[in-house]
Structure formats: structure tokens, C-alpha cells
Image 1 (cartoon, rainbow, N blue to C red):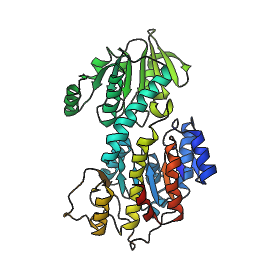
Image 2 (image 1 turned 60 degrees about the horizontal axis):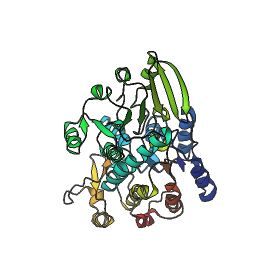
Image 3 (image 1 turned 30 degrees about the vertical axis):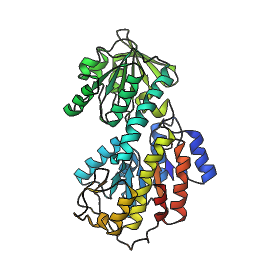
Image 4 (image 1 turned 180 degrees about the vertical axis):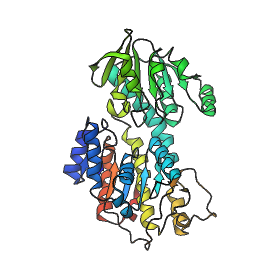
Length: 392
């Protein structure tokens, strides 16, 4: 079963097709309000999942806080996003993460391509579709120089924009300078910027004191997972009025007469006003999502004590599985930086190849790519998960 990862990210035709053509229960409506969004998460959890594939960690958070009686049946899960991994690592540190979750976002074949090239292109696509603005010659402020920020800055520069990067990590800041961008604090960037794009995974990146210094006509948007990177309540307090001037473009008239344009209610602009990543990029990310159920089905146990990793190539994974290194955490297998298993409780022990997953929740109904990926869900439902390795 599948539900949305963000209230504005669903493509209704995809959700309808998954229900009608593939018989996959799908709980998602584009433009749903917060109450409906969370009711869909609750509806998905009613199916009592054995495996969760989350995008932002909302589903896992609800499972661990409000549906704790379901936790014993959950074998493991995955998390797709930078923001979600940050939340889950905080849970792991606090001891509230109750089952193992694989940080798919850490895979080289995920963040190198999905975050950098996918988010980079689709974010700029979303800004242009929403506003029809000419980026050439404009000062575009990119908040954050992680993999998503790198991609956004690169694509904006390619369209002729004067790109300014704000970054709190000094090493990444130096990297941005050496990549040819100006780097400065947000307090300085707001004196120059025409377009602002946040991609940090953090909250309140653009705050009230920044809106007070922006030039009239500034365009502000977010391509991080949640709508908390832009302090919208502060913007509303500074405003005397608000109106929608284009679809998903809200004009805030500040009390001193300046105007600030907020795109997509501060939510993911690449999914809300555009179509998200091209399917060719998402195929790589979904292949990474497909591997963990396979490994969990083949493995007798997982560790609850520390983070573990496995390599991104299927050949190396198969080699590790044959010696049971992934299951035992053998130090003879060198650590990998690619996919990290966040610590949770031990999964139930069972003989290899005897674990069937017939209840998998996938969070995210925004792309056409799930149509291709849905065959994976049919195999998860109808056959042993070991067959999923062919998707790699």
C-alpha cells in the first residue's frame, strides 16, 4: 500500500492508476490538507505493515508514537530523504527507534544522482513553471550546499543566474567558493537576492529578520522535504495582506509596501509546481529502495547495537550475504559509506528464505516512476522477496 509523503506532491493520475490497474491501495490526493494527509498515514498503518519505505519519516514517527502496538510486526524499513535520515538518527540517538531502518539516502547511487541532478533540475523547473521568470541575470540565493544545493546552484548558474550560496559548514562553504560561487551569511545575502531556494533539511533558514531586508518582488521557495525551512508564520506577521497571483504563488504584501512571493506554500517546489525528478533518475533511487526487503528476507537477524553498512553493488551484497557478514556485523568486511542501517531493535530471527513480506507501505505518490516500481510491490505481495534482486 502507498500514501503521499507531502500534501502537494501527489500526481492524482498516478494514484488512480495504482489503485485501478495494479490493485495497490493508495491513500493520496494532491492538495490535501494536513488533517487529510495524516488520516491517510493512519489508513495505511491499518494494513499492519511488515516493512516501511518512508520519505521524510512521518509514517515511522506516527508508527512509533501513536501505533506502537504495530511495531512488533515490523521487520525493518528504509528512508529515502536527507531530512528523514536526520530525524531517524535523532530517534536512534534518543533510543526511540524501535526497529532497523536503512538510510537509502546515504547510497552513492542515490544522493550523487537523485539529490544533485534530480533535485537540481526539477527545482529550477518548478521555479520557472510557477513564475515564468527569466533567471539569467538574477541573483539566486541557494541556502545549503549539500548534494541538493550543489545541484540547484549548478543548474541556476547554467541558466545565467548570479548564484550566491549560504552554508554553515565551513568546508562546504569553501567548496562552493572553489566551484565559483559567492558565499555569505543569509543576513548579507538577503540584501542582494532576487530568488531564494532553501535545500538544507533544517528549519527557520529564512526568518523574519531576513524578510525585513528583502527587496520588493523577491521570490522565496523551498526544495527541502518539509515546509519549515521558511518561517512562514513570521512572514505572515510582517504582512498586511496575502493573495494568490498564480497557481501556488502567494503574494505577501508587507506592511511597508514591499511584496514577497512564496511558492507552493513553502513545500517542495519541485514536486508541487513541477513533476519531480525524471523517471530515469528515480529508477536508481527505487532500485536502492528495492534491495533492503530482499536482504531482510535473506538475513536471519539484524543488529540493534550499532550502525551497519552494506555496499551498493549487488555483487558485493551477494558476497556479504553468502558469508552472513551483513547479518553478523563481521569486522572482516570493510565498512561502506553507501547505505547505512540505522540501529533499532533486533528483528525476529527466522531461517533464511522463510520470511515473506506481504504488507509493505511505500510513502510517496508524486512521480510516474511508481508505475514502473509497482511491479516490485506485486512481487512483494505475491512471491518471495528474494526475487527483487533483479531490479538492481
